[in-house]
Image (tube, rainbow, N blue to C red; front, side, top):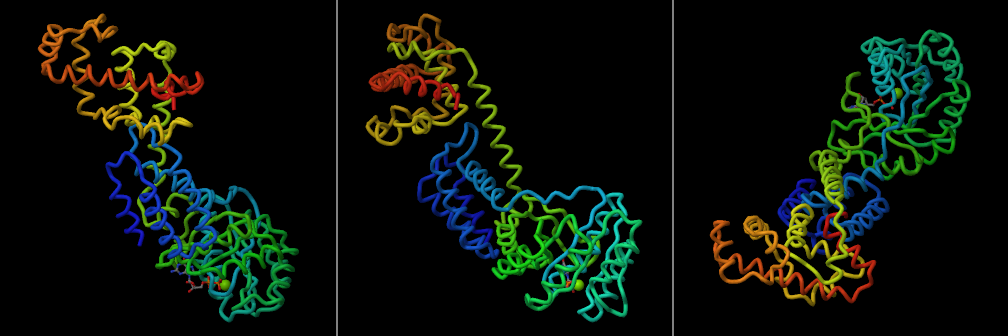
Length: 445
Ligand code: GDP
Ligand code: MG
């Protein structure tokens, strides 16, 4: 379904602005992708509202298509929900894993130990699961494969005692990873047991391990574990399957935590640190959104820098609008997009007033603009300052000099007149509005 979001996005290619309907369609596709990926309805709705609001209010910066701009908004809003990666300091610490049976705790314990060992630390796994038959052997084998220290009791026994002895037995290790038992469902004695183990080993971090296929069951688990031991982060396992792990976001939200690691296979190396971009792109079935977002960011900054010149709009407010001013505006438009869009950005100037103007008053296409610039280059300073004084013989000379034709030169002069008239209509506005508008025209977004 992600591909239908991509399809919708592709339809927007080349559009300079999005209609309400465009935004609706995109939001609908995003909703579909996220609900499909098990993201909670309430989260999806909140996200939708934020995206809609921003997409309709914010203008794409110059050099940015409407499509890229909305993708940036989507990415930023998704990061808000998905969050940054849980901080994992590369130093001695104790981490305890919690979660239901089969969620992937034991596998994750060995994987994390492998991960820490690759970072130059000395990890040890302590297996306290005496409930599941074979838990000891499974953990021991995986730790051998990961070449990390391991402690457990092959004969079972009291999990709390195993935890205590395990911490002592592995005191040479810097990072202690404590694996715990799970049950098919949350039961009081499971919660009691994990609370006792936690009191014994005093972890720096408790991670909730969730199968990517978990749906909204994540909520209750997250709440239970969080209220008993406090959850500082989430691990999503089995992301190598078809499930996208959106349910885990519910747990992240519920525990006010973040995602620490992702499990992507059955071997000890199949572990990744969580990283928002990849996860978001996966949830949406889109390509690299972060890179795109950064590109739009750069365009915005360039636009701001380009706007820093010393031109003051006062002259135009006095009613003068020369060809030089027009040229500056055309440069600004080249950076920012069509004039009518720029006008729409200005508070109080949206829709209404623009609709009263003749359709082509602000319509200077890229192609025409390029021609106009060439023509202006063939004009004298005097002509640029006082276009009204340009006569038929001058038009002939300018057309010849610029390699265009008289018709286009006249079009340019006509366009100038129209813009001048348009700007005069705005003279009725307050000074502040006018200044803001002219600044906008100059690209000081
Ligand atoms: P625990 O009961 O929470 O300790 O879960 P386990 O670590 O025993 O994992 C349960 C099953 O899921 C085992 O068969 C694991 O091999 C498998 N498993 C765990 N993590 C992953 C993963 O990231 N990808 C895949 N494909 N399988 C996994
Ligand atoms: Mg286990």
